[in-house]
Image (cartoon, rainbow, N blue to C red; front, side):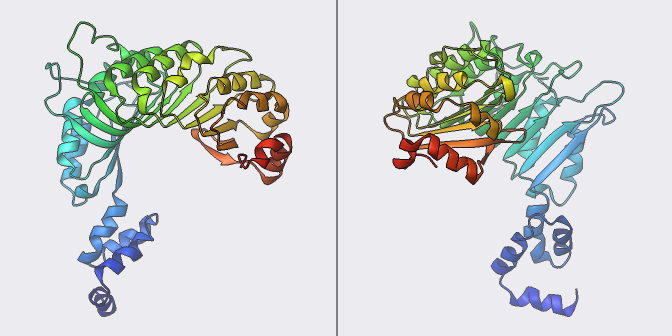
Amino acid sequence: MPEAESDVCRTLPQEVIDMIIDFLHDDRRTLKSCAEVAKSWVRVSYYHLFRKFRIEATPSFKAGYSAQLQAILRSSFYPYIHELTAVPIPTRSSLYPELTEEDVVAFFTSLPRLRSLRLDQTGFTRHLSRPQPARRFSADRLSINWMYPSIPGSSSSTSDLLLLFYEIRELDLKVIHRKHLSDAISFEGREPPPPIMVDTLTLSDVSGPLLRLLRRLISGDRLHTMRVSIAATADVVELGELLSTVGSNIYEFQLAIWNFWSNDFADWDVLGLTNCPNLQSVVILYANSGPFYSWETVYGLLAAVPARVRQVTIVVRDEYCLNSANWARLRQTLEHLTNLQRIQFRLCRGGDLFKSREVPQKVLEGLCRALPSFKTRGLLC
């Protein structure tokens, strides 16, 4: 080590060195260089370099993900992995390695700082015959993305995977194929499974079997935020039944609606938002655009929002959708929200269902002219 670098390491407090390296959290090249300067710089450099780690398994690995994990455990950075992503690599043989119960247990027992697990288009299967897992884990985030079409030959079980956890602070389920839900009603006549504590639940492109499964698994004691994207009217009733089961403590409810035709669903009261006594914020994202955009859907949803809600956010596909609004009708629809303290209009942000962007200032000024009473009361922002 050069003498100048040695002096820096000796004279600067470790807290200051850590703070400096923290500023480089997204500069991987510089972080790698910092890790080679001094032993005292390795810890914070590795923290940013390996906090998020991705493993890719192919059928060429005899043991799939377990072989990948063993390779990681022979490294010096494995104690720093906080978020792990498991992804299969497709091959011409159409055989995909599946994640197993033993793999998940090994992840959380071998990686001391692991708090987040993301499964991207990989199957899951249980090799063990016992009815309940011997050990359950706590995770800050579990994200499952099983895309259409389903994994060839997969015997995946969503319930078996979820039951490996007793606590998931943020559960994110995307496009769960019905093939992975073959056991959604298998709890009938059996001892109820132990509940899973969830703080935030995000569901993208839901299906009735998935909603019925979550009714049996999720505890509503801590659930404060629910984000749901639906594309079929038949699932609205199932969603309402899920809310009636787990919605007692929900503070914020976000609903993204895709590919709905005009007047495709009229009775939004079946959502049962009035049965959520702590609901304070509602976000409605209606993603149709052009000639398929119907404010009737928005009006119907707003009419189903409980009077006690304090904040309403309406997210539209683009600013042109605002041109077709009947502002007098919208004002009338909002009148029943007696506790309303804030109403927002926002625009979709790319393909991310639950992130939005601000409307341009010129558009906001037009909204204030269209809804003068809300502007005067300081509700429109």
